[in-house]
Length: 242
Image 1 (cartoon, one colour):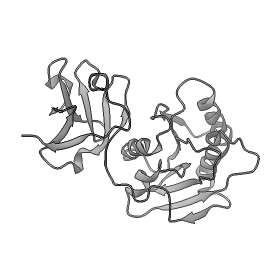
Image 2 (cartoon, rainbow, N blue to C red; image 1 turned 45 degrees about the horizontal axis):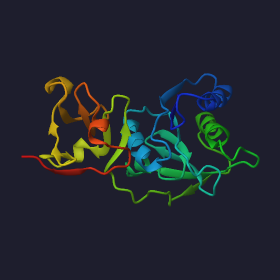
Image 3 (cartoon, rainbow, N blue to C red; image 1 turned 180 degrees about the vertical axis):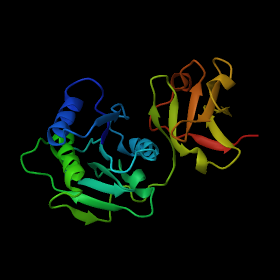
Image 4 (cartoon, rainbow, N blue to C red; image 1 turned 90 degrees about the vertical axis):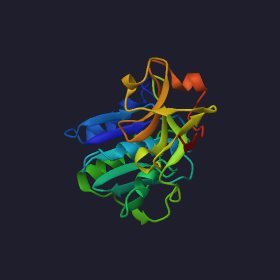
């Protein structure tokens, strides 16, 4: 199974072309759209979201992850073997939170063939590499590396990593590692915690553990990002909530 995680958006020819490459090389492997609206041009923030989603991706899956503002430059293409799954994408921090989340991993630099599009490595480099990994379990001319970009990133970040279509604000902070009694403060307002939306009245802002295990800020039947003027990349403050 292939899973696609990109900032390509749902319009235009890009997703379809990546799928066409995968389908032509591995016609028996399903291709799943994990998401195509990761924060554009923000590989580090998107990387924390990918790492949170990666925990429920089953072994033997190959994830093609592309948030790549440096496409066509000297940045490397890499593939990482993490707990029986492959992650393929640019070496720009996007894959780092996933790679860093396990004690044992193998990371490989991939060849970039001559003549490929300088602006579409998702189609011409990452998709073919993912297909070869699914078929053979390795890629010709790959070589192992130990110095991937983002190796020193913290396991959690207080930055906003994604804002969904409802205006709910996802952070890169896992609830499991948030000290007990701590919560977010936004625009000087202490945000109360709740288990789910129906636990607060309509229009009330709250934070909760989302389905990926991350701290998420929402407004019941409202738009938290708009209310507080929040954007991807903004840092939030956490403090003890009495």
